[in-house]
Image (cartoon, rainbow, N blue to C red):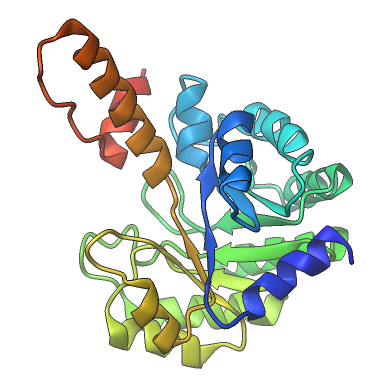
Amino acid sequence: MTLPETFHDLHRGDRPLLLPNAWDFASGAALVRAGFPAVGTTSLGVAAAAGKTDATGDARDETLALARNLARLPVPVTVDIEGGFSTRVADVAELATELASYGIAGLNLEDGRSDGTLAPLDHQTTVIAAVKRAAPQLFLNARTDTFWLAGGAPDMDETLRRVRAFADAGADGVFVPGIAADDDVRAVVEAVDRPLNVLFMPGKTGIARLTELGVRRVSTGSLLFRKALEAAVASALDVTGAGAGAPAFSYGDVQALVSR
């Protein structure tokens, strides 16, 4: 069985695929050694580790370099390519082909833009279709940021419109980061015949309940990277003997660290 086929099958188990997100080879290898059957990447972690901000399209080279390394792992790997690092359809399709040539099993493609808007739906579906034509073996996880960018007031109608359109364009799965309420999750599950991926949010999304609702994949996103930063700072403070606790790092905190 090839890696892409294995990765597809991992979305059909009795429980959702818990996908931890790595930011370098060592973190990916450590997650594999811990027993996870697949590994993803976190775009925030990859960008921030290179001194760059997330979701701006600046970390293409770092993402490809990490993908080549992670392809050495003995489990399927899926790569977060933000919005594709280009607005040109042909460029994104070419990127997908390159990732597939490394042995990468899947990719994550989002419709959110750095200016806080969503990509036009017709453009996004054209990109999805082009990626599937160029690299049909990849598991294309199509992400919509309708919840992520909504500031607490997501448009459920637009969410459903987008995930349905992504599925019709050929996406293998749909991803709605920020979705948590039972009724919202259930509505997306019922709207498309594709695996739903949600973002794990401590205190909001329990795996048991997500399983009951029909979620097929749960990603940790940037959580592990941010916790690693916190642990590193805490360890350094311990050495000083100051006894001060390390601050927690939010997504915005990390972006602020590397913003120029």
